[in-house]
Image (cartoon, rainbow, N blue to C red; front, side, top):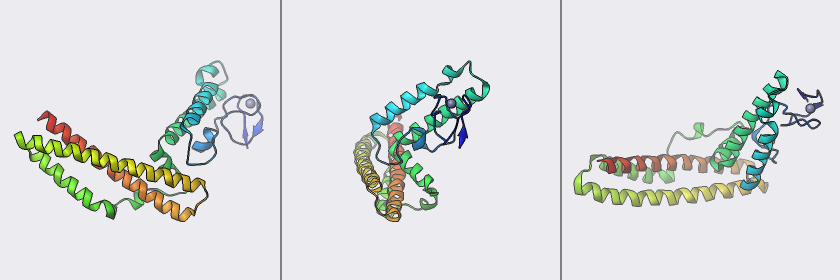
Length: 211
Ligand SMILES: [Zn+2]
């Protein structure tokens, strides 16, 4: 139970007081902060609406004349709401947060390249090395290949994002948590690698342009 800093009512922790609507400054998970059920498939429009509506209700400007404890609660609740919104609106951040809620994280499981990506990672690294050494006409040809490679990696990223969306749907349908957790980690790990590859190819394409 938590006590409202404004009207004093005792209640279960939530974002705003059930009696007077003041921010409670309670420590909540990202879903509870936004008043959303703990589900992985999120309606982006509903999330936007909830965020903007709640932001207005607890905005520090509204409590500028309130006692310090209420102003403090407003600041804490606003920070919590913003963090919750940013975490939930991005599917990858949402997936990582889902792991966190289960006391899991990617880092432990993310030290080696996922086996099915190993060949691709090797190939791209080889191409990147050539790009760094290229000059003149060769550079132009290499740039063409690099742009094609970038498009290919972005398509692969799209497929991984679809895979993530399907994993979310299976969680919400009440699938086997251990299997889903394993798949979720694998997908997020591949996405992390793919992001790095795309970023590296992009950077070298930028360097070629400058040369
Ligand atoms: Zn109250």
